[in-house]
Image (cartoon, rainbow, N blue to C red):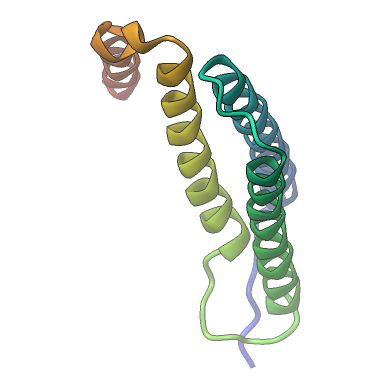
Length: 127
C-alpha cells in the first residue's frame, strides 16, 4: 500500500482556500444583490436560487475534503489535493461573477483599464 505524504503546509493551504472561497462567495452574493437592486431586478426567488447554488459549492468542497482526508489512509490512486484544486476553481468562478456584478452596478468598468491593471500586476509578479 502506498502512503501519500502531504507537507505540513497542507493544513495551512486548506484553511486559506476555505477562507478565500467563503469570502468570495459572500462578496459575490452581496454584489449580486446590489446589482439586482440597482437595476430593479431584485427577486427573492433569484436570491434563494443564488444561495442554493452557493450551498452546492460548499457541498462539493466538503466532499473533496472528505476524499482528501480519506486519501491520507487509503491509496485512492492520486496524490493531488482535490480540495485545493476545486477550491481554486470555485474561486475563479466567483471572481468572474463578482466582476460581472460590478459591471452591472457600474457599466463604465467594462470600458475602463481596471482589468489591464490586474493583468499588468500579475505579469510583474511573474517576472
